[in-house]
Image (cartoon, rainbow, N blue to C red; front, side):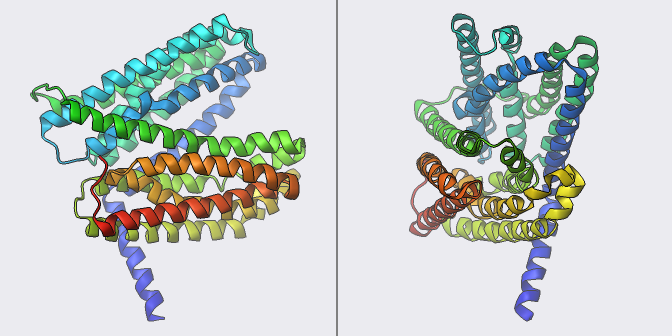
Length: 431
């Protein structure tokens, strides 16, 4: 009993410390952004022409792949390099290097996409005007993302959350208004307005921090370091993002049952939020770990973070599984009552990913180790695709969950093992 009380007291104290440090702002901000986005999409879809919306969605999906590249990973790499105790001159140099080169690559990718859709056959030729008008969105998205990451790197969690909420709110309000007046093109205009508004707000902080700081150039060795981390992070993020896409693709193509596909999508809506919860925690912890130097202190800190995250995720997943019937009936109605068994197994699958795998995969880059994540993401994606294919054919829809559970456990164990190994051996960070 005393042991349980100590664990409860430690969890309570840890939670209080994180809330006072800005965790609550990050978590509530991310949830608000998610909620506002859902509300906006529901309202906007009702206002625009269905066919036009299909063309917009097609173009938006194409640009989604470019946004995944994040300027070849440079925006994400900023989180490590600007979180260090750099001189103001070096901090500014890293930010300018990533911003200029990342924006240039995003523009290049968008230009190639525009040329490609006009020179080659595409399923929806009418989507070409949308592709053209959205060409600058990847650049603006990268600039905005880099600004937010700069805030995170310097511990400005409240400002980070505020900018995210501002963008979602402007996009929601302006998007609804312009969709009513201009139709689907109004949604494109709303994205430009929301991004420009948040870029201007974010730039005020960046400018105030860098005012009067001498502009310097990075040395070749420093450029190499940021490129190595950026490219490794890009590969890891790309293959990690492909894993849920592969799940849906194989379910659609192997099972080919509209009811099962609908049940699978509905059943995963709430369990998938566990990833958002862990992601919010990692947003808070990444710059803290990035500033630490002593391997023993880092290991102790990361283990505490892992235990705290696992406890929070386990509690949420257990409550979610118990309340699955209520969630299904309340959010989706009785017609999806047969999705409850699928939701129960998805709670387990998402909990293992969020509670076990995501913590080391997010914090290894904070420690300066990126190559392992890239290799792990590629191998995990390949194994998961093969297991999904085999188990779906033999077990139906539940095969997706079992395949992912196996992969998440193996990759999570490997990531934790590697993290503990490099800390105990005191290995020099790659970056």
